[in-house]
Length: 316
Image (cartoon, rainbow, N blue to C red; front, side, top):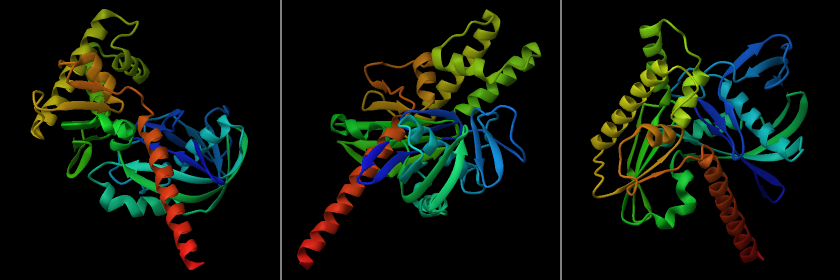
């Protein structure tokens, strides 16, 4: 969260697997209840309904405004950041993003979706929040995660943002993002999760918990039987090889460029990939996009303030 005058810039990275802010990570599942749930943790109360957050995986949807889920998860992200500073009342400017190939066509719709209610009152984990959503900036996913280090992106660079639902690819040549060389593939980490669960079920007849598989993806190992571990590792290795296959489709050539990987899939590539570490940068900060959204939103608001002041000075 960044303060800009009287506003609080709060980034919400609306992932298919997790909702990230600059400082928090919340599973992007949401279940509605007509009465208050037994357990109050991770519970949102809004418009006379209760919602348990993070219980189930949200289904992949190519357009995030088809239901109210991502709006409600935005409120959760805002509350998570405000709660860190013991705030329950604020004017909020939301900074967020969309997949690279979709941001041009969906930006305004998504922005209007976030801004549909200026004043919002709700409770999260029993705490009451009274906020005004006074602005919204929507950026392309991936690039914000590395923008603070853009001066180091000399020569030819490929950026791969491997999220839970999609994989976003962008070229950055001599510090300049190449707008016409951006692509989105529906090949996120959830595809690997499904294959891993099926591999265990097909071989051993066991429905393995996703949390266990996520631990293996994140750390390369887990405290489970070696037969299960090796089978999941094989699935992960095949998935990562397929990622490199997709990158090669977009002319990834290790000898001619550097690859930068962000998102939840970065750990998978680190743990299960075969690559030259001197030519591949793994950015493991899962909140990197959210932090970049906040920085870019502040720069944009600073520019708006400067232009407004210059106009006022001329008018005088």
